[in-house]
Image 1 (cartoon, rainbow, N blue to C red):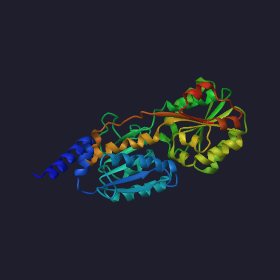
Image 2 (cartoon, helix red, strand yellow):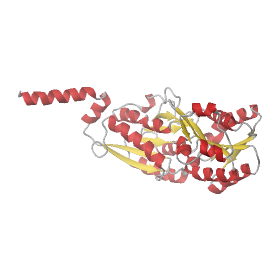
Image 3 (cartoon, one colour):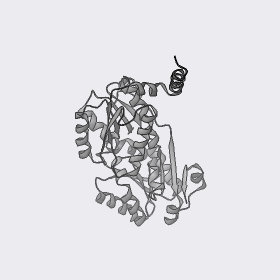
Image 4 (tube, rainbow, N blue to C red):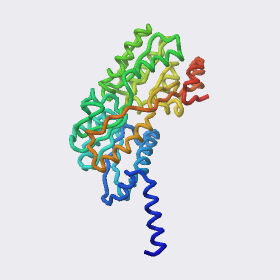
Length: 335
């Protein structure tokens, strides 16, 4: 063997040894694989694009490149259950090798269409209660994925809202029953119990439109000592900007489950899991399924990162002083 050929082969072997095993296998795969992606967010939402970018970057690190050995069909549901249903049918009809499913309404729609195509869900709250999986350690069937948070998150959000506004006496939790986990009761039950223990009046605020959101916020603004918790619900996420605007107009204290709503859009305070991290973590599961793993044998994963942000400028506009305990605990403080 010529010396140059030997060095080339040796260099290739060394480079391969530095790659993760799944990346090597992906590079060795010559067949073009197809992934369906159904996002719950609107295509114009920058946060949705950032989450999807993290997922595709994760796949790239594992050796999957769109246009080379991977084809990706992406659809955006925009928190609309009718639109989600149409796209679910469309993606399943394409017979992809695996589908990435964002959120409870999206996963429910996809499971109505197929029980054979592997589905990896992200940011689903209660996959066992929704019937998506038999259990977290052993999902069974064609579905597995990554959950958002436990029901106790509702009571944690109430606690933080009361820390920043100790005088609050009435707190509503807003959600759309068509898109919220267990029609909203998954989070509301824990929140309701915590509110009553804290001598706070809990209110279940159901809203299916911007007009109903406006009615909820303005009614809270008409009385003093009222607050609002925005439930982790993709409809509410897609309508978060009207909530922020109405809250400012009506002097309503609001806590959100999404960090970017505070850092980018001027919301008061947020607490919730790192959604970008959850979506990114789906890439290795998709990779394993593309290499033959059974989704029913891949355990459902829980969030590993939670984050809090607070906007001091918004707090001042509402006449609030942010306590030092929140400023110290926050991952990001907007001055």
